Length: 427
Image 1: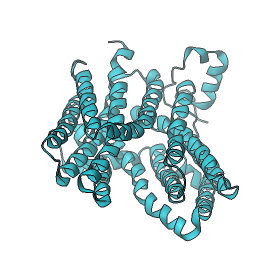
Image 2 (image 1 turned 90 degrees about the horizontal axis):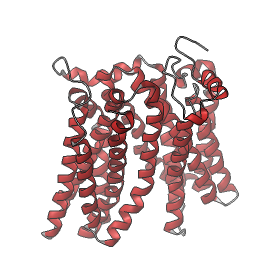
Image 3 (image 1 turned 180 degrees about the vertical axis):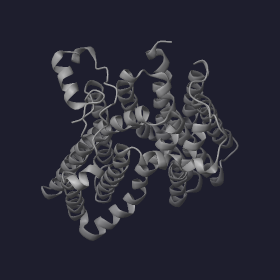
Image 4 (image 1 turned 90 degrees about the vertical axis):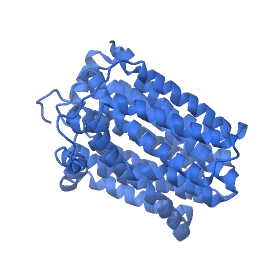
């Protein structure tokens, strides 16, 4: 089967999965609010949707590594479709109850985690090594486009009718299921030995063998905490602003993600991508802090989020490339599960940290503290004893990516040799 035909279902499925998660992330809390007239109930619905992200990535990676990824995706999309349909049926009967909503939201969050892990496990078996980099860049772009559309779409659809987002997602999950069902035979590996409870920790053990991935976890966890704290500082200080203006500023990160994905598609990965990641974040937080001093926070916060989106996409593609090329396929989902758990873990502390900083030093003081912390971290990455562990270089023996035709010139190949050495060449 041609490569493009093979991975089309993954790109489409990734977009559908992300749109579904984002629209339901708005629809479930809104429905809980309408059904109970309680803001606390809306908060619990949002919590039920995101809690599995913290609890289920490591055991989810274990499950995906024990079964065919395609079969996991089929079960996941069928489960999501049934879960959303159950809410629809309950609405026709005068419900759903809060307990039903919380359960459906928790199921959606858990199944979304399984989908992302299974998608990561499928790619190495489907894409030629030279084309993996461009495939990952396209997947990253699809995810950012879907994230940009998902939240406003969820709010709009709920405004049309409270049942509408659930009807739309039932159809989307059915389409995704059909794509993978008609895709052909199972692709992936099956376990050649029985499952053991200690296999859950295999992802952690694998990461100790790969310095780049170990460093990437520290860097992305820290920077995710920084940027999400910055977002909370902005939201906490947005009193008196229109909701449209706040939404546009917060959407800037998705725009940056799309731009960064486009850059990843046309350029080979930088060996020092983790250090670049830190300095882009430092530049972004300097912008945000400066914006508070010149009393133009919205414009500068938007620019800061565009910058972090670009840097995040560049590093995400490089990290995923190392995962699929250097990790044993039999343990890939567990490694990805540990990595994603650590990255998302920073989100949990961002809200209380941002609120504390605004209460302590208002928007200006909180932004300044984040700026100092981020610049210090970026500067420390240049000190060899710390930089070697915090921001290790990309492995030198990754397959050289196949660049678009426009860049297959002599100068582009020279740039590729400078940035990603051929196997066996150390720099």
